[in-house]
Image (tube, rainbow, N blue to C red; front, side, top):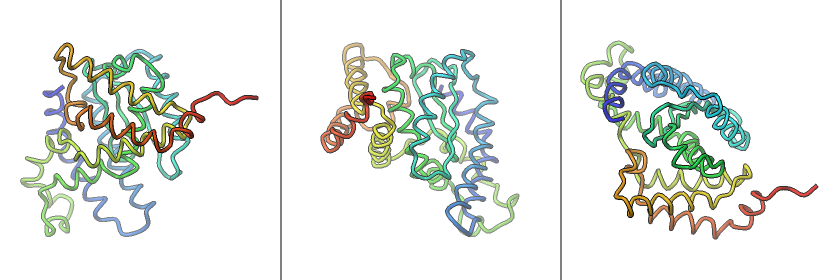
Length: 255
């Protein structure tokens, strides 16, 4: 997906810059900021769909939508909205845009063996990034715009930022601190929604074993996250703290 990411990043320049400008120009409530994120994310999502083919299997879309909708119904901030799409790529990947637009590839669904709980952990992780505002913060941090140019009219803020920001915006990894933060919040969200929080640990163990046994490259998604061993350790610590609630919530309720 590297070449596709590069082409996408270059074409996203104007749209990302517009979202950045909107977010930094908003003076108002948290709802105003969320609305600005939604507008920026909608532009970005439109560009993603234009350049990356969606998976043509309606069952794949329904599978992801079912899990995503369940998770979204347990997000505490009801102003947050989420949309879920499956890309046809065989490379394992998932990412979230500002405004709650979550994309997941067919490749990562197959790595999850189409398991609902494991898929929920992937989606919840990406949703957690949105809730924490990581996607828009990453865009803002990658910008070369100075404080002066941020106050200029929208067309006056182009220049060097447009020539450099696109690739960094799309490919730049989150810090390990943010990734682990998303693991933590994602696990809590998945458990609250009734999914088995232990699925994340199972997935990490399996992927670590695959990598060790076959020296298999697992794509940018796993390559830019913290090491499997650390994520397994952190997930296990979190599960130990809330094992009872996770296990209870994942069991069918007796009538």
